[in-house]
Image 1: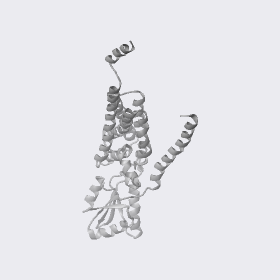
Image 2: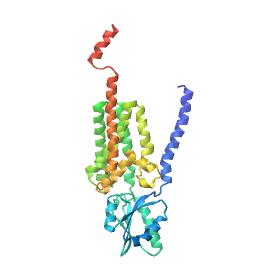
Image 3: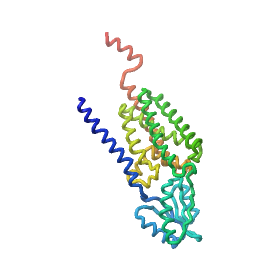
Image 4: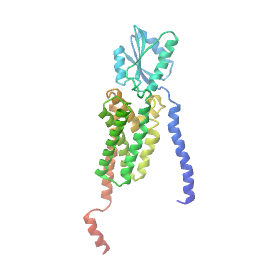
Length: 329
């Protein structure tokens, strides 16, 4: 490629990347709003009819789930089936929230339910079923962990590739580095900052699996198509996985298909899984755990497959060394 073509490529590529980055990060942030947000309603049908009518005014905002009583609604919140619930009791209306699932959603529900009721002279008692830790009431520390974990995974995968590690050695390096990242991250987030409140080893495992999912995908893609595979995985993880993760709000608060795509990528799945094991005793953890496991499994499999293909594609071993002098003679 001539110097003038390289110059034109750089001049066009940089603004294109900037535009993509601005779109990926600014678009979800500017369009954050509830979209079919799971919300429970509990109590007698006659009593909850007015509540549902008020919620229906927010067209497309809430997905209503009906429950028999307050206990059933509370269980649904703790199981992460819904983000909150409106309970009609003899004492008056009650709002159940879970700020640990999303402080933004908890505040939104308070404004959407308690605000109008209070204006009509009917105070609503609000109960935070799963409160966020006092050291991180807005969930800022948890959302800030998405980018470092993604960068750690990309760095591990790129390092394995550039150092020329292949096959089993590459797999051991990826697993070992991800495990250490998990231990260090849990020590910082739980032991030092105190922004997580679940089982320490479970949190370390989530951090490690999130890192391994990215690292294995980067190294695996590079093992199959060469160094270009690093960028092929790093680009969607950085430019889609981070802004589409819903870490700062919730997946159902993002415009579609951003919320869905984000949960298919390691940053979004890792964030959802971390919230489940840290604040909800592992409730609703199966889906995101399987997503991360599939990324890690396919990535490590690609690493082994790439090493096998390269081994069969070029002569190696003593037999090849003996043939070379003979061919030269």
